[in-house]
Image (cartoon, rainbow over all chains, first blue to last red; front, side, top):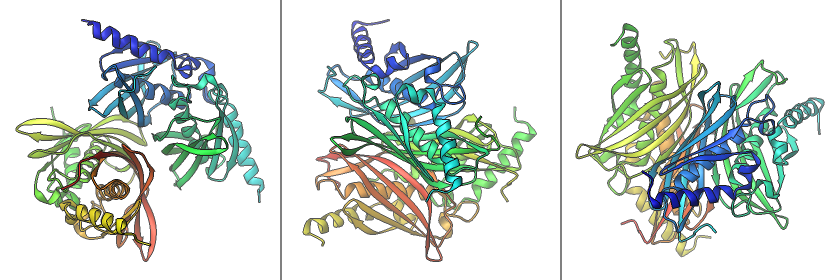
Length: 147
Length: 147
Length: 147
Length: 147
């Protein structure tokens, strides 16, 4: 069941995502936003490749970091903003597929710090193959609404 | 003094970097390649911004990871290639400046694993302000030359 | 169902754990060893405390690292040994309880590298409270049996 | 030149270290405490070994984490305490020597968060061999003096 407060939260998160030019640059979208969870999708296209024709590891890290950050934003008050303090990413397999999906989730939510993780999958012939795993620390800035 | 083997190494590293479409996409260049060290530069332009007009943290991570990886490549044999196994990045300050510089360095070089770090600086009015710090593990694939 | 090869694996892992003096020093035991999974338990006693009477974060990290490493060992061939390359640990809550449980699991298993994670719980009045989360990279050394 | 405020800071840090039973358990001392820097020393003795007779990686991580945390404490106000949020540790070489030295340093100091690093060295025949490298995030709790 989606509540009114949920739909305001989703709107707030999507509005922020939409202001990130860098996400547009790589053609990322965020089709899933739920309490404690987001998904960022990126189609495979030549502009984001590395030298072997796979998606660049930097792009994998970029969507993992962003999916985790927005997952954190889904659980913070309206008058707060979030800041990515640090993250650690393991690259498990080449990002080889028709598209990538980064799934960010809140693991532990405190007043000041939120810990998230993200898994990145390459979708190949309809199958999801995990290609990266991230663990991240987010800081909540209370009273600092995003404009 | 630059030796012949150095200049071949620099050529090899720059040729690989040049094949990374994702680096072109964000307008990154690699003006510094030395034994154990590389620098990636990115001008500040609107396509790589996040919602507050700073350079996106994902782009900061992308050039840190890449600078560290190529620093590792400068110390590996010609018939080897390198793979980014994992990295950990702390974001220290907003990437607010006319351009970014990621400086990657080899910390410890083993036969199979190389540990690097990278510092990312925002250049503002000619001053370098450190905005991110990375620690990274690279795997060396012997006998797997990059085409 | 436990197979013969499982019971040899469990024996091999427990024999290695038993040779780690540092695990005896903190009074750690490893009551759970299964394919891809281990558990290390430590009772709360005053010798492993920090200044506020909780278990020291360093001890939490120690059992997380070790549980992840042995989880990796459960999936490697008999003539191989494992090496902890690096790990990243988030401390989520004070380690406040009658005992600690570190649960290590294999996330991805390759020929040379294995990625694991570990969760550490404080057991308080029979409830498990997660107090730390780790992501780790393990290297497999083939042909290097532990003596 | 040591100022009065420095000597109070050193006293405060050493008093806290001295209340950590776990540091006594492994026979650690902290002979160096300066603004932004600490050193923890541990003699090699059999109680802290792993199965090959080297110092256990968990002990290496324990003193790296603690040295970084106390380095942070040297730069915080008297009425504040510090909390280790997370750290990432690369193990570079076996901890093989007569003693270990963990050197913790403040890299970036903010009001709420402090980033540190630590290097751990094995001292063998008077030479220091780097065996681990850590990057850490510390949270400052203002108005929460340690008792």
